[in-house]
Each structure stands twice: as C-alpha cells, then as structure tokens.
Length: 304
Length: 286
Image (cartoon, rainbow over the protein chains, first blue to last red):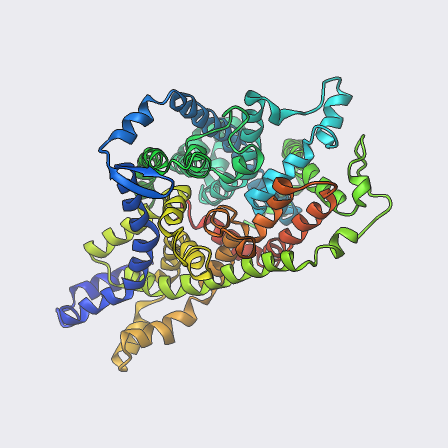
C-alpha cells in the first residue's frame, strides 16, 4: 500500500512531460459518464426546477408562476401530516433495522459453525425485491386466508386487517420495510466489526471486564463512524422509499401511509399536478442533499 | 485467528455462552422464514386450495399446475425484458464506468476529484424525482417505453457505485506494470484494455452481479418509464397479480414470485463472496 503511495507521489513529481497536451486527453475518458449523468440526473433536475416555477396542466408547461407552487406546497394542510408520516416511517424503520442489523452482524461475527447457512438466512429478505416483499406480506397478512389472521384469531383477536386503517397500515408498512432492509445494516456493520482488533477484547478479559463492558468501551467507540454511515444510508433508503408503499397501500388508506416520496408519485400519476409534484420533489431533494452531506463528511473521516 | 478456534470451542461453559447467539438465530428464522415458506406452499397448491381457512401449510394434493401455467407469452416477455434491461445495463455501465474509474484513480487532480464527488452526490438524488421528470419530459416522444431509455436510466443510477467499486480494484494494481507498458510504447487506451482490464476481472464480475440483481429487482423504473405491458419488467409482472387480479390467482402469483426469485438466489449461492462485496460497495468502505 505504502509502495503504491510512494509511486504515486513519484509520478506526480515527474517533470511535466506527461502533463500538458497529453493530460487533456484524460478528460475524454470521463465524457461518457458525464453524458449519462447530464441526461439522467442534471437534465431531469433542471426540468423539475423549471416545472416547479411554472403552471402546468397535465404534462403541458404553461406560463411562469414564480414561487407559487412552493407557497401552495407549504400552505397545503396535508403537508405537515405527510412530513409526520415520513418521519414516523423513516425513524420507525430505522429504530428496528439498526439494532436488528447490528445484532445479526455480531452473531455472524461470533459464529463458527453453519456460518454460511446463517448468513444466507439473515440476508434472505434483502435478496428479495421490494415488490416481492410487499406482495409477499400482503398475502401473508390477507385478512381472509392469510396465516397472519390464523395466528391472531388463535390468540383471540380479530383478523389481521392491517391495511384498512391508516394507523395500522403505517405500522405494517414500516415493519415490512424494516424487515426487508435490516440486512443492509448488517452487511455494513459486519464489514466494520471485522476491523476491530480482537487483542483489545482479550486484554479486557485479562483485566476482568465482561462482555457488556467490551461492547460499550471497545465495540461502540470503534464503530462510531460506521453507525453514523449506516444511519444515513438507511435514512436515505427510507426517505426515498416508494415501491413497498406503492405495492401495499398506494399511500392510503386516507393518506395514512403517504410519505413525501409517495406524495411526489401520487401528485404526478393521480392528480396530474406536475408543478405540485416538482415542488415536493425539490423539498425531497433538499432533505436528501442534507443527508448526503452528512454521509460525505463521515466518509472522509472514516478513510483519512 | 483460525488456530485459536478449536481451543476456544473446547473451553467449559462454552455452550452456555453460545446460547444467546443461537437464540437470536432462532428468532430471526421465525421472523424471516414464514412468509417465504407460505408463498412456496401457496405456489404448490391447486388454486381452489389456496383460499382454504384455516391456512394449510403442506399442500395436499401437491400441484405443479401453477408453474406449468406460467409459460404464457406475456410472462415470457416480462422475463425477456428484464434480461435485456439487465444485460444492456451491465454492458453500458462497464463501457461508461471503466474508463472513468481508470482515469479517476490514476490521474487524480483537484478537478477530477470534484467531478467524482459531483457524480457521487448526483447519484444519491431520489430515484422517484428523476423518473417522474424523465417521464414528463419524454411522455410524448418515442423515447419513452423503449429499451435504450430504460437501459440508460438504469446505467445512470448504478454508475456512481460502479465507479467507486472499480476504483478500489484499480488502486490495487501496481503502477509499475502500467509504466513498463508505457515505456514499451503502449498508449493509454492500450494500457487500459490490455493490462488494467484483465487485472480487474474479479471486480468486473462483482459489478456485473450487482447490476444484474439491481435491475432484476427494480420495480419503479419499469412502472414509470415503461408504459405498455409488453415493455414491463419481472417485478411489474409480480405486482400485476395483486393490482389487476380477479378470481383465484394466488397459486400462479406464488409460482411467479418463486420463479422470479430463482435467478437472484442462484447467483447469490454461486457467487456468495462477490455478491457480498458488491453489496458493501455503496456503504462505509470506499
């Protein structure tokens, strides 16, 4: 590693024969990727900003309307509720997936026998697509024929009609999302756990410390940056989540599961209000930029 | 590390200490497996038996009708489409990302670094924002609902992570090899194709696996940017049962889910190590 580092500096110190005309050719190699990004990200983002500043009917852009769509957005009575739903959904799923992912990573790190089998078991929900997971649970919790209902009925409750009331639908969607996403946290934690030097635990054991002290004094401090990264990765995943919600509830019932990203989707495809969708999209984008900045900050600290 | 394991295993009280670990494994199994086993069981029932209550876990009689019934032209089209999108995205993403990852690793400068940061930040833009804008931009053109557009969009979404991942591999190639080739008169492009490319083959394999699984499992792009049934993806095929289903469809639905899951599961079993390497690429390690 250090050798390549030296080589690199040696290369940088080399007289400017390699620089100049030759160096400009380097940029040819990034032309394709820049073109793809202009088309897939930059263009659509400009278009979104443009439509947010104009009136739209269906997909036609009409006259300039300034910040009207934003004042409409923030005056919308549904917005505080949707922000609340987004927070409840994201933080709820995070509160489940984070400890679950951490616990399973610790288990995988400790386990010796059946390691591959257990890892496959833990990863199974993540291997499935979001569409599969949503429909799978929809069928499992089916109020008429699902095993979920059989269990709740056997316990003396009614059928698991979770998707018919706003509150229970939100809980169900949150749990399903956590179920699907905890292996993502696990995989990230596992990579980091393997970098914690085992000698530290051994010296702690020699000094008479127990497992809990090892966890608090060695594992947690070592994983601090990883925990922040995992939190950010998961939050981004949840804030952008459309598929699982779309497949199970479409944002209903009565808007009970309509997060901000579902609002963008529904504004476009149900209300045909492109301008309103774009204003919401820009709000979503701003939240995402904030999360990305946190991610980049901690990524830097992690590697330097 | 491996030398200490047998000693530790023989230590007294070992079994008791392992108990919490296996308890967590058991609880996870109880939480993870039932819905999956239920869909497998459903797929092997006759349609009439899928709606029995209380639910029956072991199908009786065992029926493979729902699997044989899957071979309709509409279903084959879903699978073919997803395969085309996946392979197209793998090829395009590699063509676009390998050169970029190469120069970004070997010719670092402040401007190159800020370009790469920009690419990384942009690739974190919420997918739904981009898809809906692209839909509105192209809904009136022939570009919508076409293989090139969807492949391009998938590639764009996956590019950031692909470049990050490939950079790690290229960094591990000793620069001396490339310099020797340069002295022998290789051009930069020749170095990339003849020297770097063969050396990063494992990285390319991991990236290909990662992209395949991403595209295969994606639902949203196919929902928004493919507007007619004949261009939709496997995941759209799954959801179609729920959203437009009438009568008894649960066994066919189960069979479709299982068949759609088999490629991903097969790749996972066959290439577990690379698969996990691909999964971790987007996160803390960079």
